[in-house]
Image (tube, rainbow, N blue to C red; front, side, top):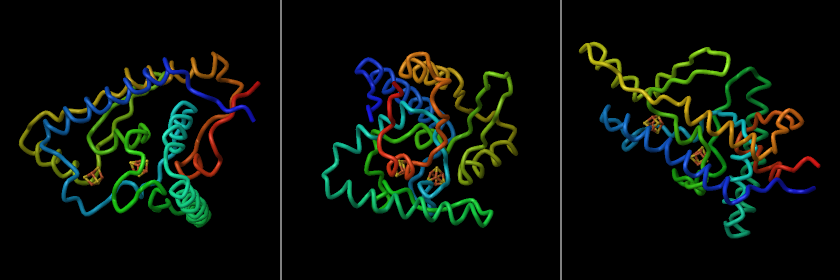
Length: 203
Ligand code: SF4
Ligand code: SF4
């Protein structure tokens, strides 16, 4: 297998996109006086699928920097998470299983975490290429804040995700050398991305 590696210029672009997402997130969180501190929940047990090769490859860049014993532990946890998710899905339930990268409440690969990990929490909006606009209300704690604000007649700030998602789609296209259609669609959990190994370049 030839590994799909991210050239340095594209790594910089991905990091800029991630920084942009964090900036937008922090702005809205500040406006809403919202934060995760003291939350009884931990979103890292939420079931999310991830959709880009570039994030998959970047996650593996971070994973490789961990000590080999840590990698081994995470891979074992990942295999267990994959099985638990499959079992829940077979029973028609939405899986709720802790991400294998979460260690005592903290993300082992914080600076390599994926887009969804960086955007979940505050209200957001995005317009798909077909013109349909999707809105996200934010997590249950944030919704309590926005519900109260609505009752007071206040405007609710939100993150407009479209421009940065568009940049991410362009970046993905560049990484796949404009040949995106040839690659199978990515629809994977973090645990699956780790169990499957880094993504492969199609020759
Ligand atoms: S995003 Fe919301 S639910 Fe998740 S940890 Fe933060 S406050 Fe809690
Ligand atoms: S990658 Fe990190 S932030 Fe994202 S779900 Fe896993 S532990 Fe949580």
